[in-house]
Image 1: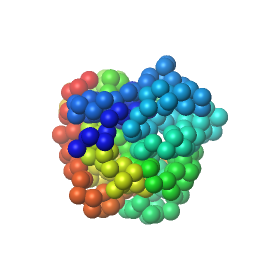
Image 2 (image 1 turned 45 degrees about the vertical axis):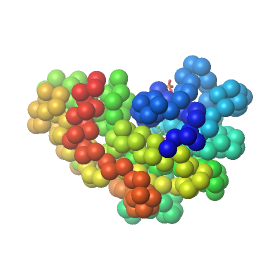
Image 3 (image 1 turned 60 degrees about the vertical axis):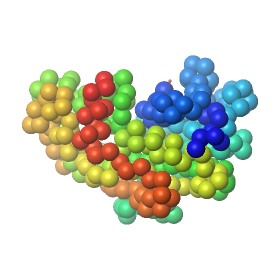
Image 4 (image 1 turned 90 degrees about the vertical axis):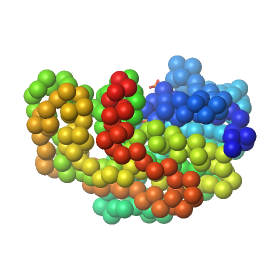
Length: 285
Ligand SMILES: NC(=O)c1ccc[n+]([C@@H]2O[C@H](COP(=O)([O-])OP(=O)(O)OC[C@H]3O[C@@H](n4cnc5c(N)ncnc54)[C@H](OP(=O)(O)O)[C@@H]3O)[C@@H](O)[C@H]2O)c1
């Protein structure tokens, strides 16, 4: 199955998603190269070109991004270089490319969204990801995989918007923690995304190109996620308080990504139930 996948270059391979993708490729016996940030600054066009030339990959998976809202809002040149220019540069190599994008290209007012729905981002991060998509979506060797809020095995619980809730409960030492109970999210396990990518990879630029959606199946607020996690980390569920105050910064209400198109490929990876995946995630720390 992987005979056309001889050497995969993963950018952002130390991140929440990239680390799972690298691990899954290695487990499947696929040669993978994932240069660290220290080795290659992906905001540097010449460094990116040299990396691609040296690695000479058969496929590229781009997981590198800046997703911290404060940094994205600054629209700093280095943020634009990473979130907008890097995907374009990688696409310009002509090598089959999977670029990871986000449900935040939508404003959350008209869920569920299919792949053809118009992009209407609410914040700078969403605008940058939408710009990158628009620059490369027409290329036949490019597959854009949009995913929603992610969680999975990571060394620092604070690196995921899901597991940071567990970190906050632990830090509070029994005190109450307010958790948003308005916005609807579909927490998605990075292990599932990695398995899905592995299934698609040999046919990227052949059977599969354009935009696809992958998502967990369970609608949850942050409060619901917190209540599920609390007993798993030795905290009382009563520590979680539902926050019904409107957000201070614009935030999509519900960006549910329809996975119908991906299901039609016949290689859809069924999402692991949240309770199972979060148990595995918290046990790995
Ligand atoms: N996390 C989510 O909830 C979520 C939701 C929807 C979509 N996404 C998308 O999924 C993809 C992966 O996100 P993630 O959560 O895995 O991100 P992440 O955990 O923040 O990881 C980002 C990766 O990019 C690397 N990186 C950042 N700046 C770099 C630079 N200048 N040069 C080289 N490497 C650099 C980081 O390395 P260092 O850490 O060493 O800097 C890290 O490996 C992104 O496209 C993101 O937009 C994520």
